Image (cartoon, rainbow over all chains, first blue to last red; front, side):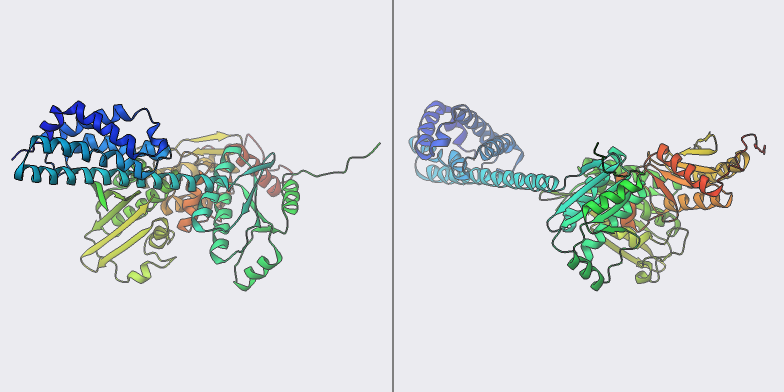
Length: 280
Length: 134
Length: 135
């Protein structure tokens, strides 16, 4: 048996819309009420809902016939999520349709038909409401992921010290994800600027364990394959001790205690010397 | 986890190894892999495709685009009906080679991917499955 | 079959690898390069791989072989322009190509070769430009 919901939605479209907007105005917090796209979105939603329920099975919101309406809700949820509107309000957009719709159902139907349609309508709106929450969650995850990425990139600035000399001051704990980004941005910068020497400064790195040391060595090896030299500077006394105790072999990598020493070494390698200006 | 696409290629000749690399590159670009991730999976594919050709006497590769939540990945399954590998543990050691590579083949390839699975039976063939996630 | 072009630049040979490398291409390159080193008495080889999007152990081995063959014929080899992503992948794969010299680009590679030759032959005795040996 076909559902009465699409017919009722179409027949009472404007009355349901008016009641629904009033209902939304009551249930929303102030920020959401202030949004001027609500009437237009609500009207579109009612239209799409009538189309979808006319074509498709009311129980199958994941189906092809509900694609448009799912897209509309996901879009709404994403935009409101980005605008800082609570997921509660976004879900209420759907849930607040229940009262006006049920009122019309009661008006048109009776007996078993009414009970059946009430059940269909409530299930349908519950599912659509949950959809907005799921979409909100997804948007949030995307935002967090992007921010993490931004932070990673911000935390690894490659700076130019001199023509042909780059430095990468590393700060904080190095895990393998972060080291990968550090390594990539340094090597990319070497390729872009055609720098002959890169200084990896680890003054701000609290500990160097076997894994971190391996990452550093890999960076040095990759730079060498590209044709650039890497110097590791800022090796603190306790780090030097740990490295020996862990039997980490730094091979023939040049290491310096301070960034200044590494810089002096890099200048010398470039055939440059620093001289004191003679006062006249 | 969903499989978004599933292609299959033959590896019979030297030129097929190149075709395999190009297909893997194209799929990894479609999956939104960064340049380093692309290069790693393409290099891994090249290593194993050469193995399939050299030791397995040719075979096939299946290239599957995967999606798992917000993660996207690429899975490659190389299969041959060659002589198989008698001592898998030894084949996976750094420096081991029976052919003309630098002996980094399998153990090195393992480091380029997130998941590595090797099945082999002497006389029946070899199947190597590698997966890299974005 | 495609062949990899080898350009003569004074005392050096410039090999620019742009095609996807297959066995027969590599074999032809080894033939051509060794022949040209002898013919021109070349002192150095610049192997420009900036267009290569991938280096696996097969190509790594080829690079090593070219360098070793050139060395026997008394020419230094510099590998130029390896892409960052390629370098990262090679290191992860476990190849460091420790036996070849590298440079960021052809120009820097040339400088490196000049330095290496100045070390070998400080008085330029081997530098006769007319010393071309026809095959």
